[in-house]
Length: 441
Image 1 (tube, rainbow, N blue to C red):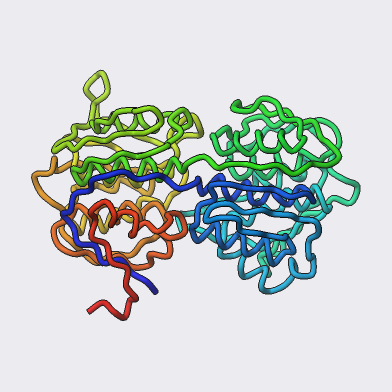
Image 2: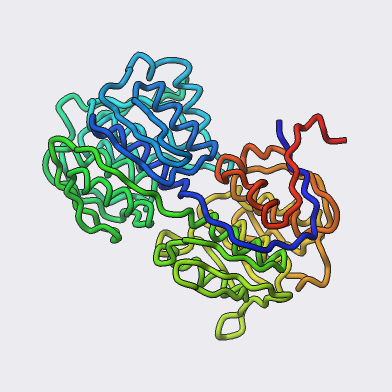
C-alpha cells in the first residue's frame, strides 16, 4: 500500500492545468454503451476510478482504443452478457461506485441491466432508490438479491416514456434515468432533475448523437425517445473540484498560483464561496490567478453572524468541496460553520486536523465549526489515513502547510480522483514523496 511523505512549509509557485472532470467522465463513458457506433472522448482524466471503468468496459466487450494520453475511442457493438454475470464483473463493479450508471444504457438498449451493489467512498449511506424508482416509472421490473447484493433490472416489452418527479436531485440518478429514457418509446419528463454542468454535458452529447432532450440546465428535462443513437466526439470539462482544491491549496500555503483553462462559466458559485473565505483571486481570460497572500479573513453575514457554508444541489455548492473549504478555514482569520447536509460521515476526518492543532468543533455528523489561526500558529505534522477522495486531498493540503513531515496512508483514495497529484504539485515546489508503506521508518 502506497503512502505520501509530505514535508510541510514549502510555498508553491507557477501554473497548473486541471485534469478532465472525474464525475463527468464516469457518466460519459457509461453512455458509450448506448450506441453501436464509434465514440471519441477527449480530456479523459488518467485517474484510478476512470481507468477501472475503462478496463471494465473492455471486459464487457467494448472495443477500446487509446489514441493519446487523454483521448480514447469506444465502440460497443456487442456486450458479453456471460461476463456481466461473472465473479470478475462483480468484483470490479463493487470497487467502483460509478458502475451503477451502466444499468441505464444496458437496460434501454439491451432490455436488461445487471450490477452488484457498487463501492466507492466510505462517506455514509448513499442510497440508490432514485435510480431504480426512475427505471420502474419507465416500465422496467426491478429485483435486488439481498444475499448476493446484486441488482437486476429488466424491460421485456421496452421502456415507455412517462412523467416522473424525482425524490431527490441525484446527479448519478438523473444521468442514469436520462440515458435510459433517450431510447424509450414516447416522451419522458423528469422533474427535480439534477442540472450540474457535467449532467448538461451528458445531455448535450446525447443530443449530438441524435437524442431529443430539452430543458438542459434546468430541473425539468423533456426527452423524446428515438430508435437509435449515432456515434460522436466529446471533450470533458475541466474538473471543478480540482480547481477548487488548487485555489484552497494556494491560499493555505500562502502561494502564488495560476490555474489554467478552468472553464470559468461552468464553475457556478465556487469562486464566490472562496471569496467569502477572504481568498483573493483574479479571472484572467479562462485562467484563475491566485496571488500570494499572508492572511485571508472569513466574511460574516450582513447582521454580523458567523458565516455558514453548506452544500446544496446545483447551482448551489457541490458537497465535494466542503472538505477543502474546511481545511482552508483552519488558517483563516475568523470562524465559519461548515454544514455537510448530504453525507453523515464526510466530516469525520476533522479528528486528524484537531490532532494537528486545528481549532475545529465537530458539532454532529453534519456540522463543524472552524476557528482559524490566521497563520499565527502552524499545524503540526502527523500520521493520518485518507478516508475518501476529497478528505484525502484536504489532509494533503493540511500536511503541505504543516510544520514538519507528515505521513498520509491509503493514498489510493486520492489517486481515485486526482491524476499524478504528487508529481504535479512537486513541479510547483511541494515536497511530496510517494513510498511503499514498508519504506516508512
